[in-house]
Image (cartoon, rainbow, N blue to C red; front, side):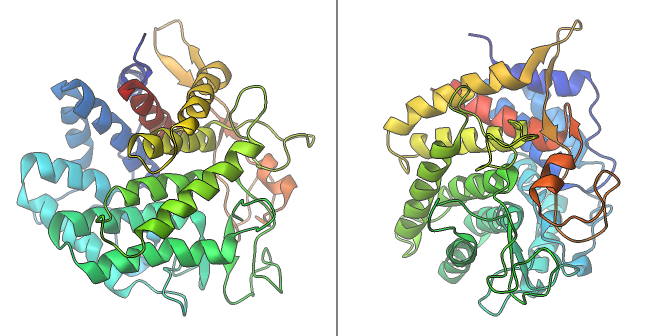
Length: 367
């Protein structure tokens, strides 16, 4: 069978997809996917491509073009994972220095009173599901590589447990996109602090963060069984709201039959990846592998098409969706309503979808 992970990595490279214009989490995410193709094929061209992209950011003294610690933006830690991959292969000290600079942000990054990282300094007291993937997973990989510190592992695990406690809907088992601990944001319920909906990509970030972080947590970590339980319960809830036809996921997860909703590529790829990887690592039951295979076929059927140039496109990607901050051209206020989530532009070949598709395809191919 054709390797879609390789085909998409080759397509990204052939299209000269811009992954270096600024220090953006989605660029690192796509490079993580391409690095996985390198690991699985052993073909050096993929590593060389990844390194050439990271080298546009990391300066000889280890400083990072376009990155400032004092912005305290959790998104900006995500690219540390791809720097770690390059460091592990090259042992070039400037990457180690860059990794230490990123790690220094964690030291002073603002937190809620329970110790969960704010999403950004400009988004005070807010926990977004996206932030677990951006911050906790890099933190876990850094600790595994350099310190193996038990207290740090515990700090990482608690991020997931506390974030879920605040965002969980006990009825459906799904997690709301975000929580405002101060209950001040216009998008937050004044009583619960919760945003209004279950957004597929935010749950996708959370699921990927769970499996990638579990892989790093030591077997004897006291929180690990609870994190595994969270992964299982989250996946059970997601399988119930997948499209019954294609086994992929809707932009607004629990509103599949609502006018304007659509099956969305990035969140679907993320959830499929987490399903495959969770089963492979033994954190999810074998029976979920069959559902993962159906979801993977759904990714190919719903979102992938070949071009006349022999490359492949990934379609139906929500360009961006957030809460608060600057109003958008398409909708105005980012208020977390159903109308807001379905109003954001739907695009093709956007890195927030490309990386997860390559990762999901690579996991499928490991079978």
